[in-house]
Length: 121
Image 1: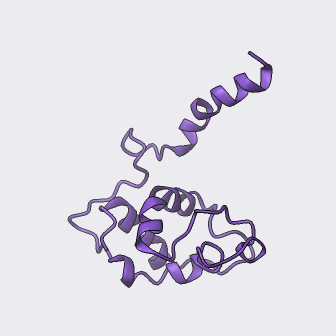
Image 2: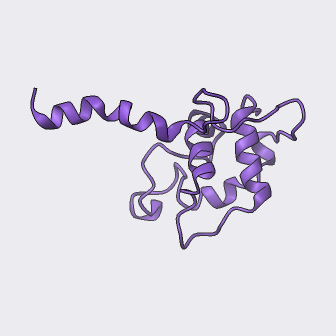
């Protein structure tokens, strides 16, 4: 096996510790009690307004400002498919990128609670 093939094969194993929140021993991210938090519906979330300035299926390459294609939050189906990624990125402080409108504490909670509690529509 070529050295770079080995690196690619090991990449998922190397990334696993970074994805774990360390709170519950699983890869679910935040330790949210869905019975006690307010879980917004997709249509009630104000956070998406900031996310979709880059993460929208209606934007083309340059307008996406380096947001990967397919990582979108402008439709329920797309947001649900990317819920875990959104939660992880928000928890880690990786999103939004520096220089873009910051999420408020409430908006961060919206994303974390929504992604943790069955992504209600």
